[in-house]
Length: 398
Ligand code: RFL
Ligand code: PHB
Image 1 (cartoon, rainbow, N blue to C red):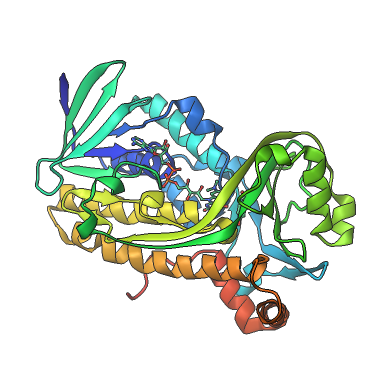
Image 2 (image 1 turned 90 degrees about the vertical axis):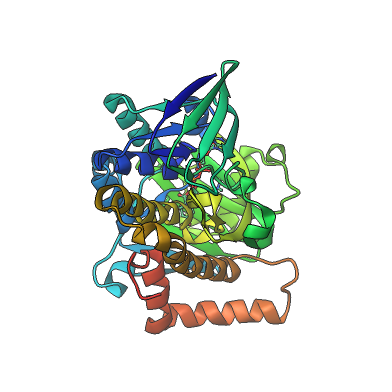
């Protein structure tokens, strides 16, 4: 068995773990990342596409801002479609100048991975049987097996950045954690295709009789599109032709006619869930990102919330190691959860507004229609949508 020592052991090399590693390194704090999958597998997952300004700023702070500066597309608005009619929401005007940036999570991950390689920072990929020990005291340990050999990392803190299905949250005793969850009665079928996006200046969110649809992008030549589907559907049920026919029926006629179609290069079905685990700290173990909370993707908040947690957590560790102060680590959970619950509310609201629910014939349906009509004509409600979409500030009164 080999033993090593570090200040912070990070579980998971998704965006949360990689970004935390980059920020700790810049502050001169030792860390190691332990990841269950291979680098190729991590980069093969197609997920988020929209970054808040705070997330872009954090990528710059972490020293990996060039990728998003060169490859990102700045958006000043979003478009809502209902009753087959398009309604632009001028997000930048409604938020006094704020924007979001279309830049794929895969690219963010790749930028951070390449930086780690350049700097020679330690990452253990394909780690098996990762387990957490003694985090109720001051001498926690992470153990794992790699190529048949057992390893132990002694550390001062463990950061659980290992996503919704990870080992960190699962290691906490059940009576120390409270979980809140809502599972939605549908999923999203996502398609990635090398065709020019139907809209390059704004993400399109469509509410139609046939269900929700979303038009996003990864670059001027790569589109990312989604349609709401039953969770009982299988990817094999959806030929490319069926997908293109369906999404075009959910948009306005002009956009449907203009949409360029082509072979898919990725197709997957994701469930929609709202989930929060409280608290986010257990002794020397801290949860961050999807390990602690999930939002349905409608509000484009998951990756951005993970980045917010990492900002709070890296500041807390820096305060602890550099200023010998416990204040940041003691406030981490409360500070992060205050912002998380607001993003949970926004994501739940936008999901409820834009999707077709199996049981919302009649009154529920009429309420959705009334709220959409009110939203696009009300400066007050449009402003609320816009300020949440660009991201709430990191610092506000709790
Ligand atoms: P991740 O990305 O799941 O990374 C966790 C990492 O931990 C590893 N792991 C383990 N490692 C060691 N030991 C174990 N036992 C382990 N168990 C797991 C995993 O292999 C993985 O590498 O979590 P992280 O870093 O917290 O990042 C969160 C984001 O990935 C997620 O919130 C977003 O993708 C959500 N999301 C979106 N967020 C946005 O901000 N904007 C969007 O536009 C957006 N669109 C989306 C999305 C998520 C989607 N899906 C598929 C859920 C669209 C979709 C369709
Ligand atoms: C994406 O580009 O994958 C995307 C964009 C906006 C969302 C969700 C996903 O709300």
